[in-house]
Length: 523
Image (cartoon, rainbow, N blue to C red; front, side, top):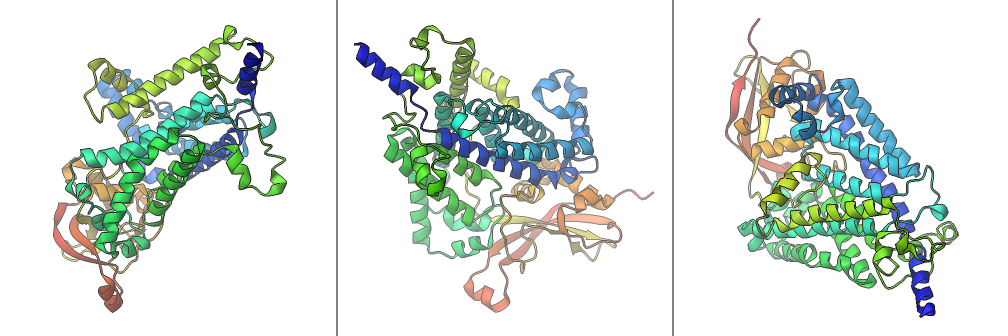
């Protein structure tokens, strides 16, 4: 009996087989944070600055005037203290600096906490421009990473504190939720293009920001597109369950999910979404696998833990899942520290919140659970996922034009979204031009439901330098125009023969005027 007890303790005290996995995950997460903050930093003044499209200071003041002190809870942001343009750039610049510190491995726990708070502040202040699923995914991943990371000032891999396996499991659960939800929403939406496997015959042409490869993918035969949709459903609905399977199947799941993300990267522009998804996928690997990819001279630095156990966390038992135990303590279950109980309780609560997000896709939740989810919603950290639940089958495109006489109109060209039919689509990810993205959403709706677009047109009439910097070409460099209008076109990719004859990537036809002609009152 005593020998059996010793063997169990030996297994529990074995070093985690995921220390190098955590080391790599945190540094790659730091790179994603760096991209997110740097990308936003070059746009923030034009989007939410004092002379931007949706000034955050005005937004926060309006909310506070209407609902008072409750606004601090409903809109948790550091910009309640200061919502100036300087503050926005300080937070973005601070986020860039903190991201580099995380990449360097300096104080990862506290740094991740600050990164989460900074990015939450920006998403709240960013309004429509920071309401994307990858913004929420970064916040959710970032929160879990706070508890997954070592809380040491400058931990070396050989001396890092043992990771708590339950947080590894929660990050894997987040990956499962992300991938499985993405498949489920397509079926539950009832969209016929997903049901009959024709969605990809439209997708490459109608996605928000196509790349030049999207044009070629659009030309592929229908049988290939249908087969691709079928394969995508297998990957999103079946493969996620392998996340919790034994090691070999888990490695297969990682390769398959990463492969899907790379294909998406190669045929579109989705900011840092796919890269963050890949970073989560790497948590399915263990140190033994990763060491095989390293040069032999590095193996001493990233020393191997002892033989990997049968479990996915390399240890046995409930306590081993919840806490890294100390071999000097022969009866650890009698001396559980209060912080370990708090950590366990917090992990269970987070798991329940996350599980409720999946459950609500299939059945209505009890009112108390819905109320709890409403309470935590302002922190944007427990989310549903799933892009393109309903596939767009046409590509309406808004073209903004200016004129001084109301007769001759000249188009403003955006940097990335389709405009001139001769300009080829290009790659921009992982940078996200957020105005270009919002123009895609606006084209699928009405201007009445997108009041920011009217603000954007007014800023063009005012000649706001910050807003004009978001565009690729300003046809009125000397002075803003007297009139601005928005015209709706229908865009289609050309085929091989048309492209060879006139070099055009797009063909378009004007449909209607999207919004009224705007002008400023004469002084």
